[in-house]
Length: 230
Image (cartoon, rainbow, N blue to C red):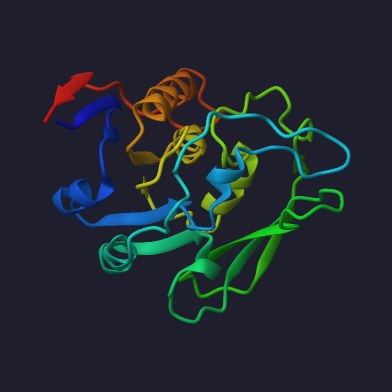
């Protein structure tokens, strides 16, 4: 049974497998997401591979044993108007003029220097430089609660490329960073997460963000009903 939390009007989070939930959703303005790449990072248990700082530790899991189901990518391409998909270099996606590049500014190690987000946007390649390497990172005041958690500022930067998309979808929500960035910008948000632990974290983080909207951003209206079951 899927759990559904409606945190505000237009802000709905689903606990469950996105393959079963996506077909029930209407067409969405934009998807901004970071699917599993299937490169086996979960098997490494996130031991440090850098020279300057130890990486955070997380319990052993199998979240990255296999890549995102191709049927999910197909659904996203056919049912959203604008698309930003991190790890797009691991999936079969159409050619694009616009790759978003996040330069992590980290020291020499065997982690990637940058992360790439494929888009369907008619723009040129763009880059953001934002330090993210263990304790040697910006946003040090924000706890890392998911192995692949992105910085809020990086996701805000991404959302700046889809300024007219009112509703943002993330079917691999994780700890909810995309949702935090979206609601702080006054956007509506639909998030899906399969792991109950991370779903609860996302609910908390997005709920807190709704209570602290950015200045000059119109606040989203409270939900009429907080918890639903389907």
